[in-house]
Image (cartoon, rainbow, N blue to C red; front, side, top):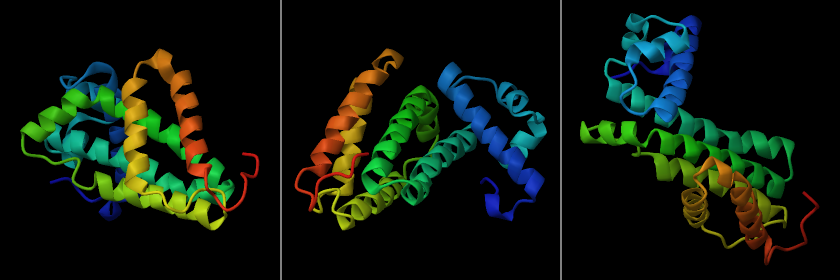
Length: 196
């Protein structure tokens, strides 16, 4: 079991965060078989420090995936604080597509973690539903987005966009598809968009 981040000293928490960031990059770029020592070196820590936080490769994969998911989902509130709800959800969609691209790079590592008995996806739908629900409610309350949208329907639409635009040279197409999705979310809103 990994150590809970809230129970760590500040320096240990920073080490943990650096390890998770390095792990996401390494798994995405080099696949499931990247050496743990390579991840530790990229994070600027020793292997013993990495193993203190994550005793197995599977624990590291699971924590890296969940950390990225939490980062994306938690950004909904921050985006709403600085943007109109329709602009906030569009920015969140971009971040989510980038997250899915990184997750695609981690696919082999995630499959290996699942095969070993880990369940990195246990909270995924709840977290996504909550983040999207927050964004959609804010947009509906402001009259900028339709009020009858199921957050998970939007999540599955985003997954579809990510699936068909997963190649790096398809990022412009992903943006255009996200614009279309946002237009669909605006259709039937109480008032016209405020010019995002």
